[in-house]
Image (tube, rainbow, N blue to C red; front, top):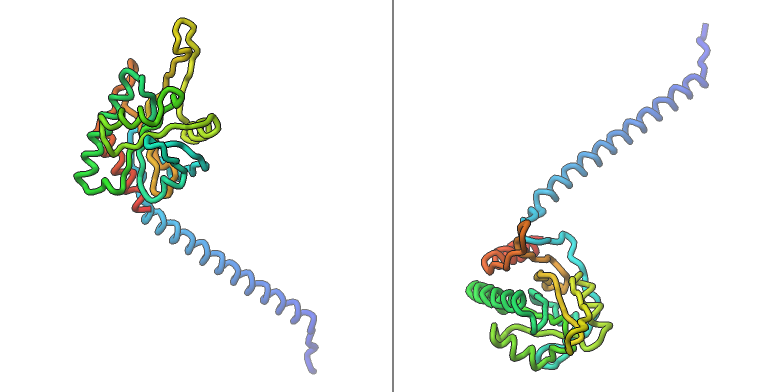
Length: 238
């Protein structure tokens, strides 16, 4: 007696096996992708430099600055693109500032000396930006900064648009208050910070002085220098 072959059953069995093989292949491929991703992430984490600790804020994603036009202490235009190719440490204040501004500039002059000892002076520039451009003219900036370091760059805005644009892009904290009892008509106060601009022209870090519950302490040239070097090496290793 010849056995009867049920081709429908065979067909169903074959289809089930094909589906099983496909599911197995998909599972193997998914496991391979997962393993590859884990290995790739581990390699990237090992190659990524550790975030250094500084007195202030180090940005993992530098902030690009908008296009602006300022005037330097030699009455020449200073553009956002002028920042390209070199590191810039920007402090800010005003020439009539009685204590914080001259103290910070003197401290930065010591930092400039330390930078020079490492032969980095051609790569690092120091900028003082005045938040009081109406009273601080270019020639005044020139003579004022020459007292601290003749290589320092003075910057001022020549219009309200660029002034607001530049100060807001760096989140400068400036307060101008009207004074009723004097001919000067207004007084200026500001926060203390040093903005570190990388060679791409982007904000890389903000350095802040140490502070306690009583007051903000003056900047230390050694701390600024060490913090800058950490930012510098972090950028280079990226």
